[in-house]
Length: 469
Image (cartoon, rainbow, N blue to C red; front, side, top):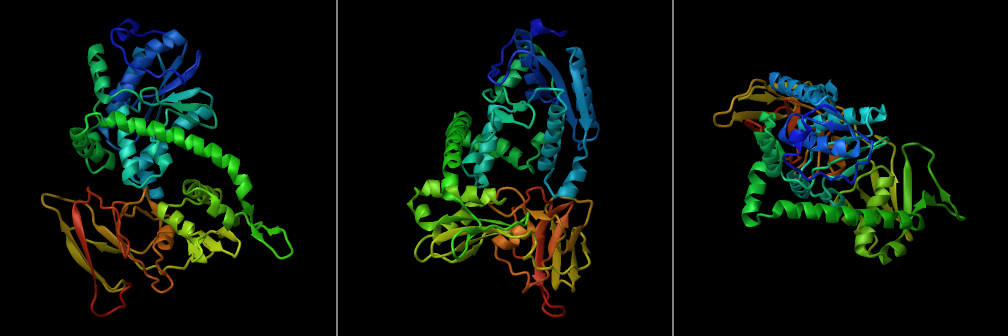
């Protein structure tokens, strides 16, 4: 394999070789940044020693114009320099943001990994190597912690992720970003800088540039210790998953009990229920009981937050509630002997929300929307400017919002169920959208967007059309 291998040996970077095997075809995901360039350069001598066949993979996300085009050209030149096959694609991240109501970070990640899995499925490579570092691991654990993750979330970035065909590996998880840059400087290897990495409107960048530096002032080893926490969480989670696989068949009762014995099970593809004897649940240690309930919900296609699980836990107590609506499609019911989780037909209980014509809101400016019963005022932050108006509208299919202190965006039907918002009593639920993101919603506290260049003040009209809330 051509390339400057002798120069590669002038510096060393600790590469985790455990997921690699002789003769493996490894696609190295290279963005052009320091981490991914270092991963490629560090794998070159490993490839010679182990007989690996390296490919270079690059995804242009279509977000930074000529800057991202220059990144793609840099990666292509790097692959050519070392005689490596290049697999490159361009994706429309902005379109996915609009269609899926995801953040830019989420959309880019989903598109990137979809391409990696496509190459794995086609058999072009046996594994994809990504350049996640110890710093990335620390940032991920902090982000998960801030969003209220369970143990599996605190496990952070996994060193190996199995796919339907092949796997994704992270050989640099034990290496710091400082070590990577020192390694590249010693090699004389240039890299590309992504200008968005300094933009603190992205949560990860705020953690990277603001929160973690403050934490390091209190404990310089916090990055290493967060990585150790992730490793502990991964091992703990693996143990519990084995335990659940062993115990769940003994605890779960499909469907509901019927008179005369036996159980009735729905045949509708979107309905289902699972029962558990209350006495057996109460006998379990609290930690195991929580996991059993979450696993039962997962098998019905639902994800329970901490508060949801605690409500179900309380139901098996003598004075517990007889019924709890947990998500838009999942409820818990208590009979004299059993606790049941019931999944309903999607949308079967949904209330129809009224649709009103959208109203454009100038930024800055004011609008009186009589149909909504609201006055909306927007005020620019100091030194800010915008090039587009906001929109006052009612919910649309696919809308998702990020509530404060929750992990990820939630579909509106789940938000209504979680907050117990009565759409029958109040069938108009206004929201404000700006540049594809919902930035305000009636009666819902959203996670503040630090990149929003204006404030929103919404008041009910004193007279006229009936106010929605």
